[in-house]
Amino acid sequence: MSRLKVAAQLIQAQEYKTALDMLKRDDTSKESFYWRSLICRLFDWYDDEKKIIDAGIQKHRDFAYLQERLVWHKKPLFDKMVPRQPVIMPKDPITIPQQSTIDQLCFVTGGDSNYFTLIVECIESIRHTPTYKNCAVCVLDCGLTSEEKQYLIERLKVQSIKDPGWDVDCELFHRYSPSRDQTFTQPYKEFGGVKSMTSRLFMKKHFPGYRYYMWIDGDAWIQDERAIDQYLYWTQKQYCSGAIHCNGSIKNAGFLKPAIMDEAQKAVFGDKPTFASGVFCIDGDTPFFDEAAKVVTEITLKYGYGYALEECILNYLFYKHQFSHILPYECNYRFSPGLPIVVADDPVLRNPHNHQVIGILHLPSPQKEKFYCNTHNISGPLSHEDLQKHSQFSNQAMFNPDHPYDPSKFGISIRFRTWPWENKPLIKQLLKQEIGNV
Image (tube, rainbow, N blue to C red; front, top):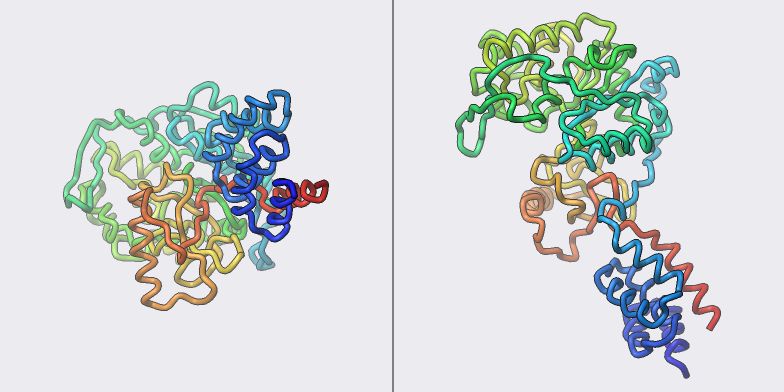
């Protein structure tokens, strides 16, 4: 019996690794190289597949499949990744927005070239939502190249890209370090990314013509559009909406330790539950927006710019006007309780503490450059002890990209573009077709 027939029987029995060993003995036929490539793709062994492609090209230079795979392997990693499929969940009829509201909504994000691929993923996640895919998206250019801006306009249909300049002209930038328990002060304009922090309170000035402005950090992405429904619903109720801060309050995060605003202003919101400014929505036709821009100007000119000052100001005005509703943590999930979990074979990312579907994922600082990480794949509720172990593992995994993998963890992308990127059922179907021809 030929090696191909034996390998076909092994593949039929789903003994793929044994089949691969058998096919390695046949280093001449096109079928051998093709099958070996498919098996490697099935298990995400791309380094091994590249060796197979290089060897196959030497013997079958005109084999179109091998040429296609060679071109694929030469692509940058980001270009090999593909967007997730949208998560579609039953909606609450009360929070479903009217079409007139959707038509008046503008998403705004921004950053520099270091954030470009993240910004792409953020906008792609908007474009993949059934309800909000055609909404206006505008970008604050805080250091993007002309090629990157052209990509955003042509490929993602961004309505407007604008360098906001320095909306408030000040000298100093203050940032508190919890690990060192001290404040660092540096020249304000050394950090182009700071533009995206201060200018988010001037969105209406830079991108006029909309009613509702939803800021979303470039390192965040939408998994479940029901989070957007909630932002809009509560913005219509109280002019401004945001999701609970991962530390519960800004004071707990240490942002209020530097002298960045008046003590009387800090007292209005410091001890109260506060929301994070990485994702928020404002009604542009209310005085709230103009007041926020006015207050950030006054405070920055007086103290300089403090890290998360825009967050402090939004919460100061939120409580000054006696608003009450803050959205749940799943609407701006920052990984503080631990990496997301997946339940059984369901690929939807969830909060490990309550199993609620995460609406918007927001990558924490040490995680931004990692394309994927390990997270729990569970079959039932996590015990208190399990949650503690999960949080401990999460912290280690986020700070150490080479953190050991074990069978109780499941590798899954936390970025909008997924790893692994292959369509596994399709590869199995291709293999089935091939062995049927032997």
